[in-house]
Image (cartoon, rainbow, N blue to C red; front, side):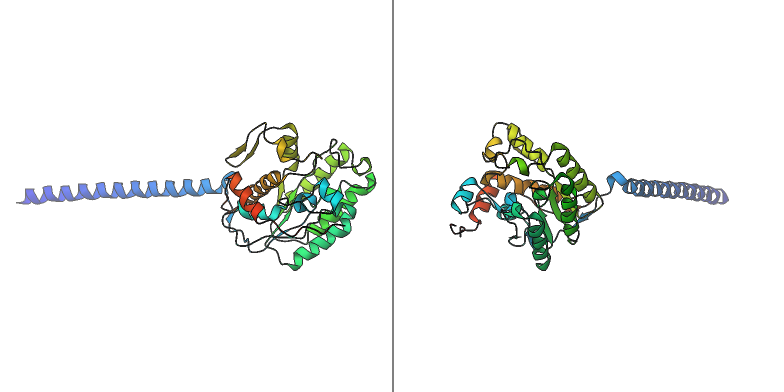
Length: 302
């Protein structure tokens, strides 16, 4: 009888030791899993700031790339359809909450400092949630400015943009030696454009809410008829030169639709954030929907 009791006791003690080992092993595994999970999340390169982007009040400011322009419009005082960027931007975003508004002006080249300042004031009065200023800075570099004034004028525009605290999309400035519509006295030197882009990039890098669209690359690809990628969408080589008008500066309606998709994709990626935008990459769908929503009242003839 006592022998049976001893054997049972030994079995119980052995079982207890085994259970304690399993518990210790389980605790160790749990600790290691927790440790490596935290360590992985702590790596700066892996941090993702996903935020909800408010699209209730999207406002556009800028020049003729945003507002639309053709030579025919200049000669006849009319307004060609399908060239405003905001309807295409709305069509490219599936979870857009309303129609974007535009305070852009195709005549911004006449007085970029005054008109730019007025645009920013109008945008701020609208209490925007997002501001599209894709070509806002263009005529603060191009135009009839002296070489010594160009950077000062550009910094004036950046100071105006500093009053905008919501997410804002700006574009860099392409070098356009072959743009027929730009007069020699409006064209800065290549070095002036390079300095302007360095200034823009430095300004943007210190502002997490600012996103920069690469207009330089987009223009170069259109000019060379090279392929253009927007997310999973590819416009193949041999079909991108037709996205630009013959003046070497402005876009066609299809080109404006593609630019809107480029802007939406850049905003989705963000600078230091990842915005939860739901985009469509069906180019023809964006073009057709955006074209249908273009303003129908042309400007009166002058």
